[in-house]
Length: 182
Image (cartoon, rainbow, N blue to C red; front, side):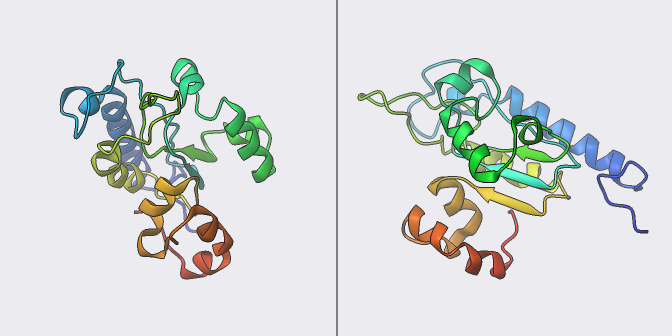
């Protein structure tokens, strides 16, 4: 039997785990959106939210934390998380089992709200700074669930359709194309 990278008996598992620990610590310490923003600085102290492991086989790539998640530090602890778990057909215990499910939003911190009180889109700084190194250190991801238009545009690239609804409607075609996380 061939060992998997997530299996501690694999010769590279310690190196992969060390790489993931290093990039995760860097993400948690990140202050790009406050100190060197590509737009208006983040209006509050950055509090990156993510859940990653070298053994996870599923990755939920969401948008950005909302106000509840900003306060709790746990992704999808809001009505959107309840809906997502129901759609996936999993309970909270399964969903939050970091050894099985990674959660990597497009923007790691709550981006703030607009004048009407709606959440702003994910910060533009996060994805280019961290996604490649995070996914490189999670070699067992076999299924990526891109939740929302920003995640779909990033992960599907030219395969993403003009609208979220159109992209979701063509999921079989997209799955057949075999697009992997990048």
